[in-house]
Image 1 (cartoon, helix red, strand yellow):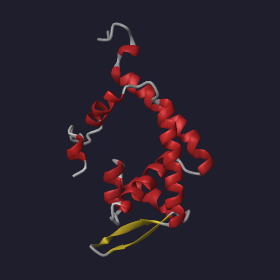
Image 2 (cartoon, one colour; image 1 turned 90 degrees about the horizontal axis):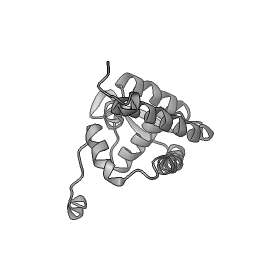
Image 3 (cartoon, helix red, strand yellow; image 1 turned 135 degrees about the horizontal axis):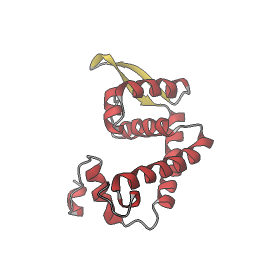
Image 4 (cartoon, helix red, strand yellow; image 1 turned 135 degrees about the vertical axis):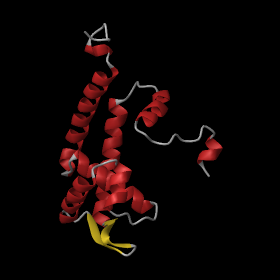
Length: 154
């Protein structure tokens, strides 16, 4: 017996599962011409973002930003380094860790890929109310932005 009298279509978890798979397929298809997998994109874009915030993050900081497994993050960062998209060097603050910096080629690809994925998002989520974003942020465990626009700029 299920608590959802209308069947699986009434289950928020099942709906989220289906939505996620459809969205991931759309993103993967859009990234294919750029020779990036979805997870490579997420880690490259996360590193690019952190670098733009004047940070030289290590693998743990990147994994935290992307909410990914640290070991998998390390493996994917090596692949991105092999492609010439980033450079890893000994972190001066922690010699056991590696500081990660996106190369000029990686930066250009990250910016291009971000535009591609943002277009997928715009197309895929068109018609979805913007008021849904705070609920998604809460479910993702992200801090909510201040309600007052003046506070956001501080």
